[in-house]
Length: 171
Picture 1 (tube, rainbow, N blue to C red):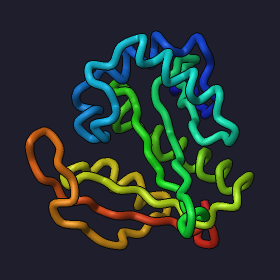
Picture 2 (cartoon, rainbow, N blue to C red):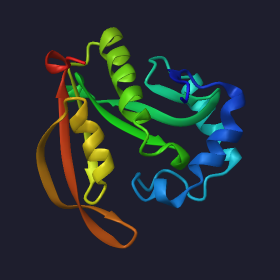
Picture 3 (cartoon, helix red, strand yellow):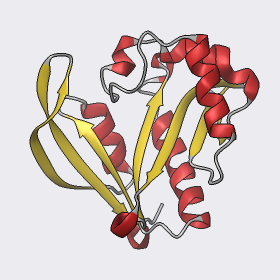
Picture 4 (cartoon, helix red, strand yellow):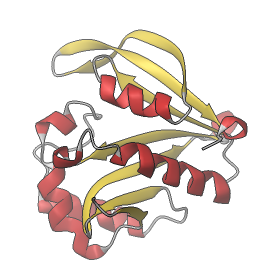
């Protein structure tokens, strides 16, 4: 059984971060602002960024003492300041093992416990059924589909919108 946990990113995580995130299958389900190919320099820049954040909103996923993924919360501003957008990815060798489901529960519990955020939401590209299933397993509710909302890899894609209210988080 793989030993999994969430933790803060460490300066020394850059090489495994670059190794696992330099994967087009992962990039295909992320925003274009994520560099691809993903280099060690990109990884070092990301780690410097998260280490300087005042609010813990990026969680490193560690499996067998190796950094293999990330869970992030991007807090809204102005009238959306009590909301946070959830983003996540996991190294391909660990897909389909239930790791992301477990780690999301831990990260969301932690984030809700020390922030005043009352709602977390996630937007998933059409066709990313594993990601939709993970969200539904931990209590997210699909609240709509925005048609042709994203333009990725030369195609328009629907956006499946999910939300989880702190009051409804039971896991």
